[in-house]
Length: 126
Image 1 (cartoon, rainbow, N blue to C red):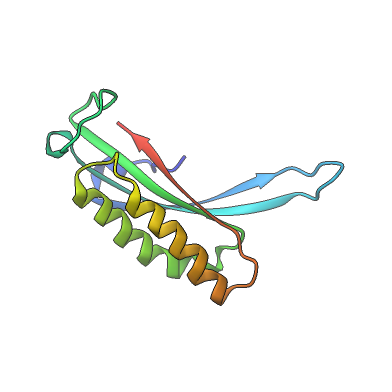
Image 2: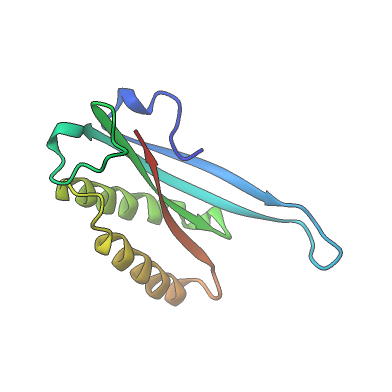
């Protein structure tokens, strides 16, 4: 879902998507909104190449899920910088940068948006 069609044809790509939770006897139906930044690199450039990287190119996406799409303009720029820095490390097992990004999102966006929920993840494609 986070890797868009044709992502292999560009250095960086963004996808926007909606996740819908059906209503239940306890909760009303709700939606969550996602943005992902996808990059790729030649697998031979990796410092640490895990056994599950079996192709010559590795694709990864960093994903943010929010309860509102209004933040996506702001998030797109930050997502691009963080994804670029993560790729520059050439070691996808080192996720400290992503953890710090998640912490900064929670802190910074709480100041601008009351009670907004954000979730950060990464999607691994090979």
